[in-house]
Image 1 (cartoon, one colour):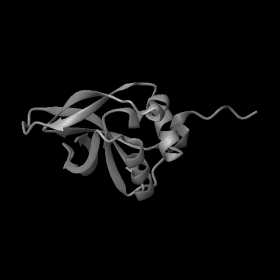
Image 2 (cartoon, one colour; image 1 turned 45 degrees about the vertical axis):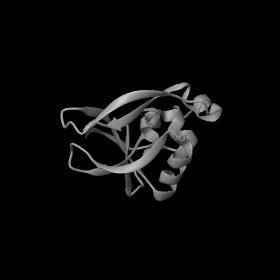
Image 3 (cartoon, one colour; image 1 turned 180 degrees about the vertical axis):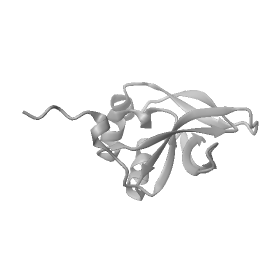
Image 4 (cartoon, helix red, strand yellow; image 1 turned 90 degrees about the vertical axis):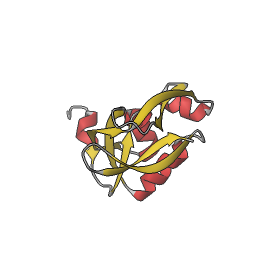
Length: 125
């Protein structure tokens, strides 16, 4: 009998796009629902931003994430402010799927990370 597979055994790196996640897109159940797989992720930091919280009214997003209140970042312009998260390696199609998952309170921008990489990140509208 084959032992059950753990999430770490299903992690795949197939994407050319970098997506910085500080919230629910790090959750395995959200990744499976949104991308159809567990996504490779590496720790990183988003400087010049701070975390706020927003109430989500989209029932599907709440059901998938298990939370009605989600973090949301906003720029502060202060380099001492920072948001800790993970960089996900996704495909263009998966980036489109992430756009569909995120509600209208968020918009996607490109931002430099502490590692020197540039990634997409969802910020407050």
